[in-house]
Length: 602
Image 1 (cartoon, one colour):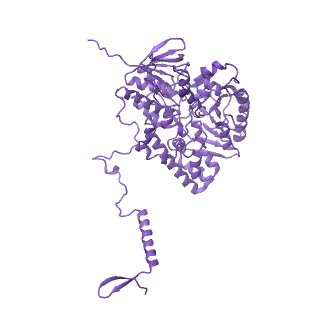
Image 2: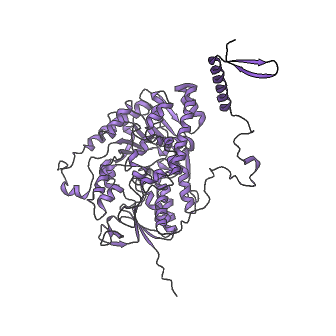
Image 3: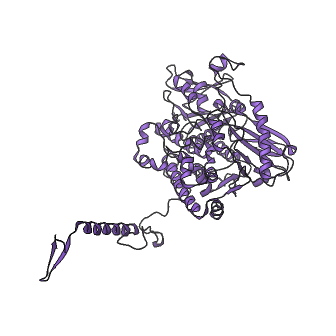
């Protein structure tokens, strides 16, 4: 008799890293999956721009937290290398360029860091650096274990003993800058070890101290670059999806999520063409704020509108330059820090603008991967953090004001054409003056560009915020939008604005969290549960038969007292002696062999 079992179906809206990875995981668990992507390419912001032999990473250009990438591919029964992804280690990590002509080389090589730190803060400075590294290590390990591999479906999850006992050690109520100031005593090094907050689109004066983990992973695990561009990782995940039978449909924009008549159960999606597709569940990888305000039946809900009022990450002006020759003064990754460091961030995050003297990032992919540009030439990406747009592009707003930004409820947007022109001049001038390189403008044979407006229109990013919602304390963990829709059964989220947060490796971790939530909700076994980790980082298992060389002992030899114990005992004895002297007590000796205490003075 033929089986009547029907294969469960899922639709994933968006072919970003989170959507593709979730689709692969669901397919491995037995689902029939369709991915619907509005653009003609996969990867979302993690995509490529190609022109006449030049290749640019449109978004991410460095691979961090490599263990999360290895974990993802291991869960899908493969490896990065087996899928043709070859990682190159960037060394140095960065060259930092200051306005006074000085530079700082950040590296995963301890000898280099010792040289660089001691140059500015001496021998004690390097010891403080090691202490900072120890704190950042704790931030990293606790976060990976308790945040990136756990869901926070309610505020009660914050009370998990395993998380709560580490809360103070994560320093979530202090800023990255204030924590760095404890260890680094010069303003120069405080800037060196806090600029990484730009990865989350936040100011180092606002970003929780926990996020020192980002610069920690660069220093402890290195910065990596996939040959062929970051999209090589996405392409590998796409190939895995195709092997598993996932149907990936490009140029297929979703216009709405379909639900049952009572609005409590998802039934599928409707495309912009009017075509309707049914499914047992829908996973949203589109920008979460955009999705809540555009795709659901009740887009005018108070919750959807409240999301637009939450703090968002910054946007960027990104230049993609095809150069007619190489610029040897630039390394693979370069950071140019503003002289007015704090003001440069305040201009972005408090006034949603661009500072006169901005900090910015320059990536030269052709420096590490020659395939990124024709021989003897360079491909250069310049990312300039700027404020996001002041208004959200939602149907409600666009219906009220399609051409004039002065309509009721809308703020006048900035003149981005003028801002881009000014920024281009400032960036070129800064690079030339600080590096001493050849004049750049005559070498630019072609320019491609992204602005807050294009980030919004191309990727549906609310207000052009390139990294989704902010990562301030009340925008993370249980306070971040949930991975499951609160009222519509069968709708889930994955991506930068849901838990655990933004960044490619973090979204990969989020894809695992969301998929496991889906499978647990439906009582479906998790295919990768219980399998041995791909990375040996837990030490040797302490079992019977463990080699004597690998048996863990607290100390090499058993001792009665530790060094601290001896010191504490010495202080106790000293205190007792002083107390005795101050009492005026005397000890007398009974010559007949009896001890006695006397109270009189001798």
